[in-house]
Length: 337
Image (cartoon, rainbow, N blue to C red):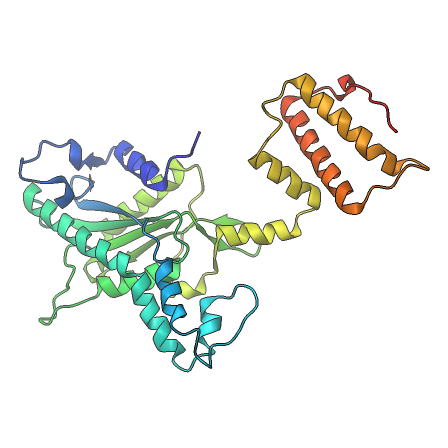
């Protein structure tokens, strides 16, 4: 069974909280269209919450931009994959290109910000809660290019953006809470922490009641996911060592013993699972008959590559046997040649 998406789980989480009202379930005026209203009301309508799931992948914008520069003489030739920053530092205008890319890939954040501000504003007007705080929630499950650093920096810019008269441009969004399930905080002791970050705007300053509500929501979200909440006030997001879960998994795989890699691979695709117990034991017996000569005095030596394949298959057999709790004494005996 496929795990529900982050968006589905977060909506379920919010809907179950006793201090939350689901706006779609309220008796609303007929002209209050769904696309123009927010998602939730929190703590006797002190906070209006709008959720935005980051699903549109902007990575092609990076590829398109970099393709424009590949023909330049200064564009170095590299082997393998490199971080974008490592490529740009070889170009004299690398800083300008990097800034242009930043705004291209974060444009989806600005679009969501603009829509969220309008939805929260409309909700305030229709429900008569003009003094409510506006909380915009960003959910990122898959888009690695929208890192915690990118989101934090762009969100901070948008929260403090002002019009010509000096007033805040997005006046209905007080704070932004973003949750990422594709990144982790890499700690020296090897533990992993999933980022849950709140960025406050100017209108959140000295509002202790909002801070209390945000802390309660984060604690409840951690409890909903059966994980601990580790808190901390961070002045500069770059002081935290973020890494994608996919990269962390690659690093972990690099240091795993070969048999553990084989076991993990089998758990992902357990191809023996559909066979009967007898057929699995028969399969194991066949592998023994193939492997055994390599370890017998005077037996024929099997080429290394082929032997590796046999040993991987044997590891898969053991993994399946352990899963089923098979008695290996019942394995049929085959003649070894």
